[in-house]
Structure formats: structure tokens, C-alpha cells
Length: 232
Image 1 (tube, helix red, strand yellow):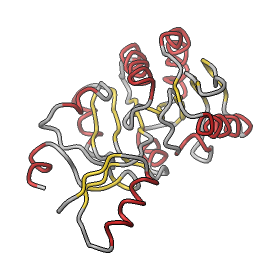
Image 2 (image 1 turned 90 degrees about the horizontal axis):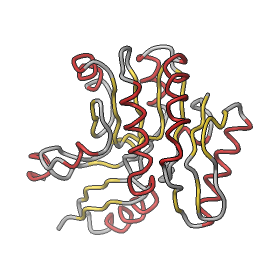
Image 3 (image 1 turned 90 degrees about the vertical axis):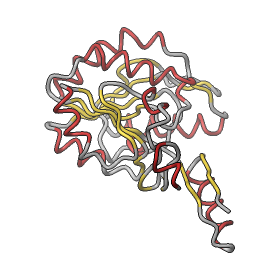
């Protein structure tokens, strides 16, 4: 009667193709490349702890793990220092050797285009990361890939409006996070075109069963949980 699927973009496309013949409806949660926005006044110590948690949870193999941090150069420079100290707490991600090599290729290609390895390592074999790339731009491969490993990209943006524009260039819009004074962060969160937005935290609040969860764009459609999910 209805199919609910959580998986990669490719898996979702294959299942939707199978369902087309019988016109079976579906709720589809697919890949993510979650953005983290830092507003003026964001607590960078809190941000660093949250990012390390996000990279560590399930060794980075989490659809709503943070992968793109958009902030001013000043904020990113200060954050980079904190992440460099904390990166040793993050275990390497695990992927099949082929997938790990694909991600390493994307990272190296991004480095050749001007990104910088700010902390960590790209790993070898099935292990990849943890790593922080700085000076990442939207045109680089890592900026819009569904990585599922502890690889974090620092993307400069002179103000929140530009940050929103940069973030929207990725086809994935599963989750996002905003750090800053609560009132300003809540107002900004309403402008983010993502399925679920967390304020001053990452990942964990989305486990609240009252929160409807689902994606937009290539991250899928429909929601589970919450009143909307129950009604669906």
C-alpha cells in the first residue's frame, strides 16, 4: 500500500522506478550533505564540540551528519584552531575500498582546486578521515557529495545571505543546523530550505518523535514521525 525507504539517492531512484508501474506511493529519505550556518555571536566552542560529535556518531556514516560549515573567514579561522585540537577524538570512517577511493579522489581534486587540508588525514584502504578541508568552494566535488564519512568542509561566506545561496547549490537538502543567539537562529532557520533544521546542536534533537523528519530536493520527499508523518 505504501513504501517507506531510507537509503542513498541511487537506491531511492531504483525503488521509485520499481513502484512506478503499480503507482504505489512512497516516503523517500535519501542522501544528505548537511550544512551548518554560523551567525554572528555563535559560540565557537559549542560549534566545535557539536561538529566533533557529528563526525564521531556512527563514525560519520550518518545521513544528517554535518559536512559543510558556512561562516565568515574570521569565524572559520577561529573554528579551525579548535577543530585541529579536537580532531584526534574522531575515529576514522569506514567505507568499502572502492567508495573510500572515490571520496579520496573528490578530496584530492578539491585540494588541487584550492582547498586546504586543515586537520586530520584522508586515510587509506577502507578507512577514511577524519579530515577537515578549509577554503572549500561550491564548485569543488566535496561541496555537494553524500560523503557518509567524517569529512568536514569549511566554506567561507561573508554573510548569512550568501551562506544560504552557497548552501542551496548542493542538490541535497535533508538537514541543516544553525548556531547563534537563539532568537536570531530561529528566525534564520525558517529561511533554510531543508527537511529539518536544528538550532545550536546537531543530529540528536531530530530523534524526538514529535519532530517530522524528511528531505527536500534529491534528499527525497514525505516525512516520517511527528503529526505529519502519522497522518501520512
